[in-house]
Length: 269
Image (cartoon, rainbow, N blue to C red; front, side, top):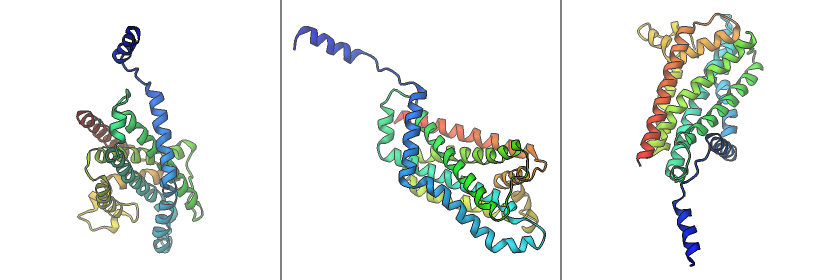
């Protein structure tokens, strides 16, 4: 090797890595994440699963409620959308775990990009899946009488609340999947609190249908608060903004903190 060639090689080794712009890295990783969701069928699962659950809830219960003058399709649709948000979060946990155990996290850690960029791309994936679920359920529920009777702003708020709920839960689940040894098992365990939150809420039946000692919990837990707010937005009724804004801010803050802690732990590995 000549002296000039040696100097060139030394300069190349000493040259600092050029940092990749956040927007470029985010766009590439988001496209990769969405392509993966399409290939693996997760996007189609986001369409089909909530439709199945709406049918399972509506068919056995609607006659009882409609005898009391309650439009059950209007009543139960928000709950099904919120349940879809929980499934979005569970799948986010498994996606993060697959990247961590499959070596993708280590490969991304070697690149000159922000450590939060991969998580941001996965959260965009979660928002897209949630949006697809919410729209598909709403269209399907229209066959049974569901309508967005509020203003355009209220209709946008209806879907925005579902996305906020899904995003907050997905950030928590994504962080958990990123640091867990067996993310798939953790994702399955998350089904237990999901089931409890759905069954012990005002999404399926009114709070007065529960025993008196548990009514305060049922009324004030997040699924009930979001379901009541979405129900009001879908009919153009007044929304109790305090509880739903409080839960939204609190859940998003906890989700952001979990994401930051998971990214910090990833840097220490």
